[in-house]
Image 1 (cartoon, helix red, strand yellow):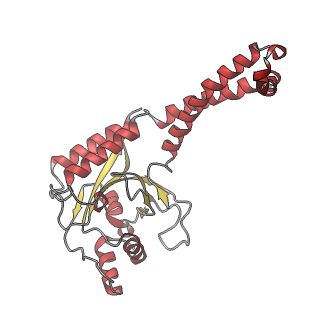
Image 2 (tube, one colour):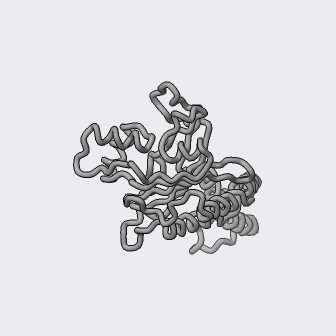
Image 3 (cartoon, rainbow, N blue to C red):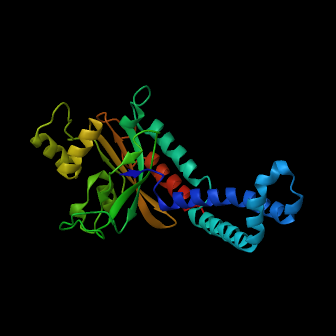
Amino acid sequence: MAHLGRHTARRRAYQLATWLERVAGPIYVVLLVALRCDLKKIPPWLSFLSAPFGWLQNNSVAVAVVVGAGVLVAGRLNAWSGPRDRWSTLKAFLDEIQRQAFKVCEGEPLHHHRVTLFKYRSWRLRYWPWERGRRPRAGWLFPVLRSGDTTQRTSSVFLAPDDAERAEGIAGQTWNRNSTFVHDEGIPKLQGSPSDAQFESYARATWVPVAWVRDHYKRNGYCPLTLCGIPIEARGKRYGVIVLDSLADKNLRVPNPNDGFYRLIQLMTGKLLGER
């Protein structure tokens, strides 16, 4: 099960770079102090420093090389992961979409009305068992970032293959259509102890496997009734999709997928993702 915003490569790179930069400075300072220190003149009350300072003096070149390499690696990671405030700004933007997109939100649990950014990848290493059309290199949409502070752990990875008929969920359908897609009609409501037929009906209405519906309902106690997908581009290339889902029926303030509201989301998200 993935943790949104924590297990993405660029975010991990950003966190590692930040840590390397924070520890490099203090280590260099301690190394310089150790090199300038005369171990024979250390007062008794600081005798505990003799051993570590002696080790640093004997291994000063190696320590300097390692710390220097760490600084260089941090610089490369920063260049690759992008601006430091990119992900925090994106998160704030998703939170604002959450507040503006849904009719019913204030005073209700935020995780009932969510906004999730998915990124397309051509492969998925962990998928097993393989099935026809569902192989590691079939094409998948992975969750990257989600609004709010709860429901940040998710296993919702959707198939987005070249064969559009097999695309899963509102995310996969949006990816293959490459246009904003609102789906808030004909989705059956699951409550209580749904029958097999009800699970199957929901799965057909939302383009997901029955097993996914059962698992989602078991973990959350509900399945969304309002779905919207928005395709996202960054740096002139297709990046993924943003999915809006709500427990409430017909809960979008702007039900028209051609409205400028959704185009603005596309442009702003693409701009934030494309910054270097």
